[in-house]
Amino acid sequence: MLPSGIGCFAGDLPEEEQKIVWATAYPPAASLFASNAPGVAWRTKPSWYIVAANDHSVHPELDCAAAKRMGATTYEFDSSHVPMLSQPDRVLDVIRTAAKSI
Image (cartoon, rainbow, N blue to C red; front, side, top):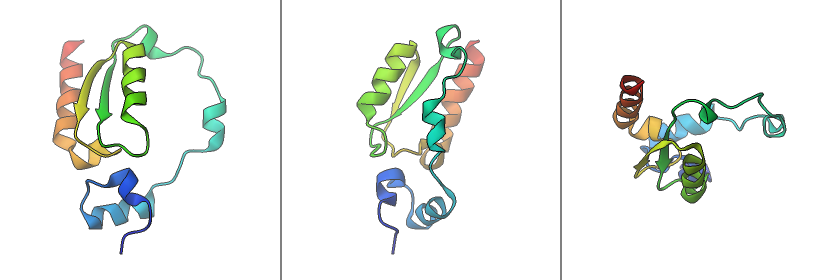
C-alpha cells in the first residue's frame, strides 16, 4: 500500500518508485523560505523552466507565472511534481537545448 499523499507529489511514477521517493524525500528547511539570496541569476541570464501540468504540489499556474516573470523558455510536460524522475529523457533534452543555446 502506498503512503498517503505520495500520489500528489509523484503520481505518475510506478508504485515501487513512489515508495522510494516517499522513503528518501523530505521537505526543505522552513528557514529557506525566509532568506533572500543576493541577486538572482534569472534577471541577467537566460532561463529555462519546465512546468509540470499535473503537479499537485505546486500549482502549474504558479509555475507558469514564475516562468513568465523570469522570461524563461518554458516547456510544459504532462507530469507530476517530479518530471526529472518520470520523464528523464525529456528533461535531459531541455538541459541539452539550454546548453547548446548559450
